[in-house]
Length: 269
Image 1 (cartoon, rainbow, N blue to C red):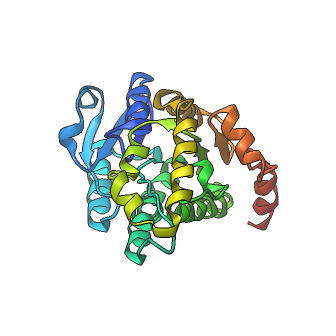
Image 2 (image 1 turned 90 degrees about the vertical axis):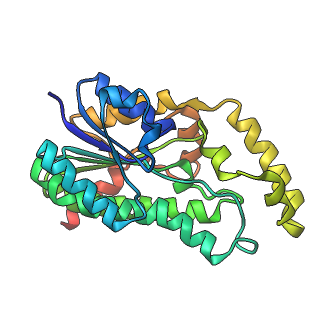
């Protein structure tokens, strides 16, 4: 059979689409989510397991179970994440901590736990980031801070992991038609009511964002890009999932696939 592919955040969206596509491509998929009652059709094609990336105990239990039942981990796809809309003056420190715990520390916990096994299999580490990991966007300070940190972590790890045969890649979607945005703003009225002087600025931002998401990629399109990275013989460090994402990221990042950066940092190992 194919690789043992461990994917986080598969209850909806990109993660779910990726798990289905990877299973259909012949891989042994371990699909994780906090609430396994949401597995649905995934249970027919994948090994569905419970995981809370904010819990070190949950991560350790998952990794041990995968190794016990599958014997190895060939690919880890860090996909679990949570959006957040707000600004630093009105957000609490606890808001920031919660966003960082899922989007940054969740990636750290999973990567740390999986790395010995990825080194053993000379495997792949793929992390679903965002164009918001390269270009900071209004009312996304906490989310972009987490994604910027993930990008820096993986860019730093890539040349080190490569010494042990582990290829590290980042995938940067733009707007994607999933439940992600709706989950980030569960109560718009309450959000706007608490914004004070920022309210009219946020209202304009939300209107523009909704227009952008009218032309969003599907989760299936993004998942297909991630799967191509998983299966690539020589994956790059960085991928954007659409022309629009490439154009947006290209405003800031001339080295679109990361090869120039890796060319420099690989010489440091």
